[in-house]
Length: 68
Image 1 (cartoon, rainbow, N blue to C red):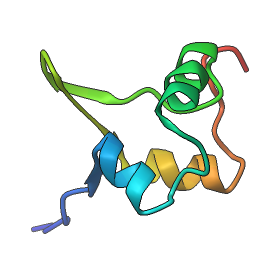
Image 2: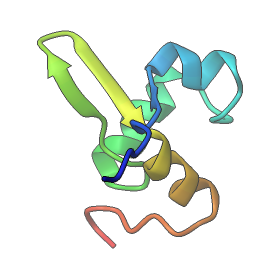
Image 3: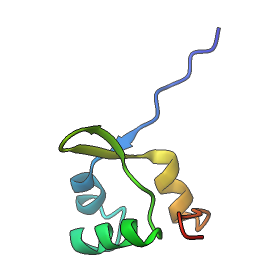
Image 4: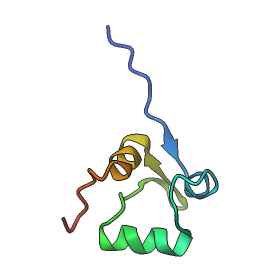
């Protein structure tokens, strides 16, 4: 029986305040739109979060965006 730990999720505010991303809100959404930053997972009409693995891949330069 495998007991995998659930993957951590980051909300937008957490990404910015903890300096995980070196840019502000407008730049974040611009990068999402142009495919240079991972798309968030949608959990409700006004709730989105990013998977830790997606953020880690982006930080390592391994993220292959929608337009890559």
